[in-house]
Length: 456
Image 1 (cartoon, one colour):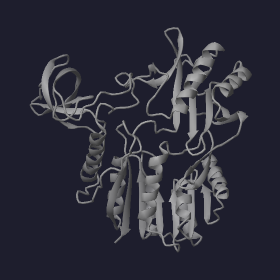
Image 2 (cartoon, rainbow, N blue to C red):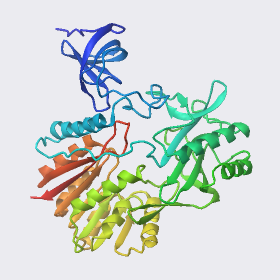
Image 3 (spheres, rainbow, N blue to C red):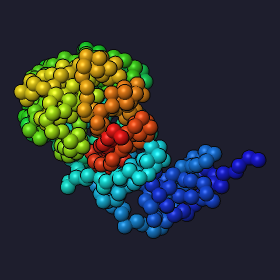
């Protein structure tokens, strides 16, 4: 018998919001049928319009609030309702932290089958604004004008902007300056449909402890008209700039960076520090975007590693050596592995920069390099992983289980894949002691976590 959906597209309903999804949308039930409603909060009674229906659930748009949640605030960003960058500015900060803790608990139970693992309160920020040290802004030609800003929700239409209140102000200045100069110098914006034009992205990087700025211009092809005038204009408008870089991406792709990077003026690197460790950061280096919370995250990872000075540690997905060098201060020796060659070059440079000689770095896939190290006699007491959103490669998890370190510290930017991987490690003989979420990305639905496992 065919199941009928109890709501129709374009139907207007009055509903009560019962819960939140992982992305911050409100959840209402109509005869057991779930409706997902962006920017609605639990406890609210709202008039909504159904915009899409599927077999088991549907989507609706908030039209009017009948009863408003005490956790609702007026979003301070003027383009919040158009821009897709932030999802939960309409929620007060305590409610954001509560939502994220609940999200982590739920995936631990549902995906990890770990309902009894302690999930601590989210480590939040005193000031959850202006925290981002990196801005990546697409450029386009819309309605007869060059625009730069973030994409609207679920689209590739750019919402033009001059200010983003989760970005450091220096990043805003970079975007404003390059956009103005590109208009004045008539540098054509990239058209992704026709694959023509020149300027694709404006990328700004900021070193919080050094006050240094790097400007990266991502272009289609090497040609950059009025290059000297553009460089001069950037230098005049941004006194703290130390590096102006061109990255060339001639592919039809949504990936921001191409493979070739040329320094147009100044230094190859900018510098920043976390807890006294100095890092050289190149245009394409991965470096956490929230320096204050990165310090808290890495300190928690260091606490979980329980190093006494006699341990050998392996840091899989080591990037430019950020966690590795934190660990090296307390470990006997740290081995870091990363698949990106430029990152390993930076990691080695950063070790020398900080006079750290008990860290070894290698390029390659962790699931291949770590067994090779093991064959050479390297036995890890602690393994630290900080994978991308897709989580750990299954082969790496199997390798860790074979090596049997006393502790595994897992840093994750995706609670769902963290829970999945913890389940596999638990099945292989480990026990998850606890999970601490850290709010690296206030005003958005994302949350970072660090978990510790011990060998049974």
